[in-house]
Length: 166
Image 1: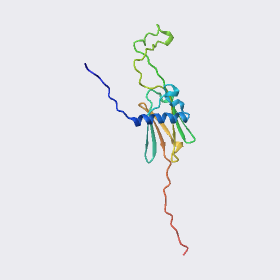
Image 2: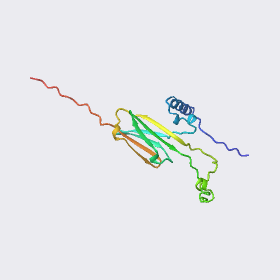
Image 3: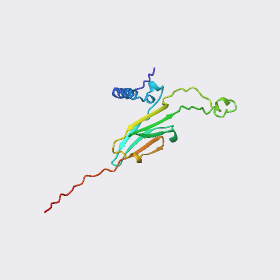
Image 4: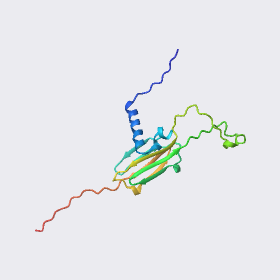
């Protein structure tokens, strides 16, 4: 008799952090981002990098067209939102449009396994005072949304020479 067992790493701090994040979002009024409240919503994974010239926010948004992502800036808060829609069309039924005109030739099959998350997402970031809000740029590439927030030029301290009247 062969026993097959899946081994998963137990990370209680990670689970506690996820729970804490969801509670915080619920109290902040972001119910779109809380799966228990919104019924399956999700949050794209985010990386934020900082260089001397800019902040770079990268979000994983596979399956979402760039035109369907909304980025707004209001009162120093950058908001990214969008929706990933569940669309499963089987190939074997795709050519039967004449037989199945009610669904435009597409047949929905029950899924065997669905691990990806679908629904609306909202992510908000408070920008620091050093951000140049007028020069923010965004582009999507290979399922990754890249938002570049340039920094304002910093004024460097300079030495002021004191002159004497004598």
